[in-house]
Image (cartoon, rainbow, N blue to C red):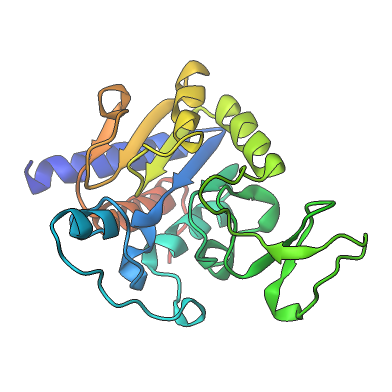
Length: 235
C-alpha cells in the first residue's frame, strides 16, 4: 500500500475517533515492543523466534521499562475524552505508568507490579511489601499463569464495555488468546466499527472496517495528532 493510502486510512481513523461516543481500545503485546518488550507472534516475537529455532532476545528488567509513544497516545485519547475503556492483555504496567486511570482499565492477565487479594480480589502495589490484605486474605502476584482463571471483575467489565462500544480499536494483538479474543465479536454485535492495527494477521481481519498492517507508531500517534486538529486542540 502507498503512503497516500496510509495517510487516508489514518485520516479515517481520526475522523471515526472524532465521531465516536463510546470508543474502546484493546491492546496486546505489540504496543509494548517499542519499549523493548518482545511480543509473541510478531515478526520477531517470542513464539516466532522459537518456531524458527532462534533464541529469545534479551529483555530489560520489568521495572526499568518505560511507556513508549503508543502508550502515551492512548493516554492522550483518555485525556481528550476519547477513551471510554481500555482492555489490555499486557502485564507490563506500562498503561498505568503512562497515566491511564485505573478505573477505566481492565488488565485481563494481571499486572507485574500489583498483588491481588485471594479473598476480596483487591489489588495493591507490590512495592508495599504487604502479604496480607486488610480483609485478611492472602496477597499474591496478580499475573495470571497458564491454566488460571482471568480476574472476574476485569473480564466482566471488558465484555460490558465492548458491548457498549461504537468504535473498537485493536492495537498490537493477534486476537487468538481467548476469552480476550471474543471482545471484538461483542463490539461487532453491538454495531461498532472495528479497527485493527497489527502487523500480523488476525482472525478478525475480514470483519475490520479499517485495517493497518503498518507499525503502531506509524499509525496511532499521527491519528491522535489529526484528532486534536479536528477537536480544535492545538499544541
